[in-house]
Image 1 (spheres, one colour):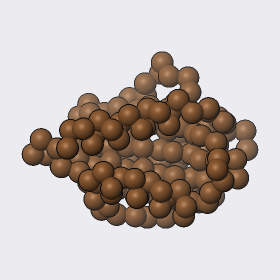
Image 2 (cartoon, helix red, strand yellow):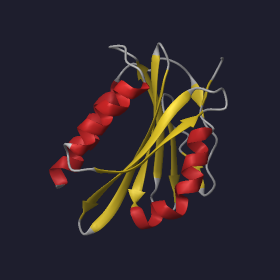
Image 3 (cartoon, rainbow, N blue to C red):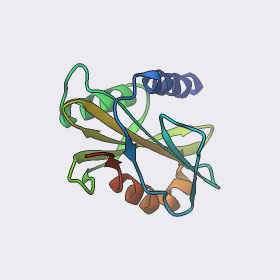
Image 4 (cartoon, one colour):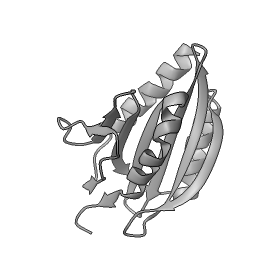
Length: 155
């Protein structure tokens, strides 16, 4: 199980190395601090280790929100994650997206990994959040509010 989590983290790191394609912003969630040293990513962390990261990659090969959401779901469920909930969301500029929460058990604790995808013709905007379930449950509303505040800058 440990290797599955490390593998998932490795894939996330590889994706984050992909070319950043556009600028974006997001409101700081209540109870979180913004990690200011990053230039290409938006990162937030709470005192109980809930983390949020936003980034973008090129939409290549081209796919819509359904295709990319299904791709993420297939990858995560094939690595032991269990889908908990799915909801359609939109940014203030009405960019449609999908927010999905997954659960995984590690070292006798449940963890939540949430991913929100927003897709336009050129970019896939990825907002990831996660942490120990007992802490994430208390921060869920702040996380979802932050995800909904996501904006592409200069649009």
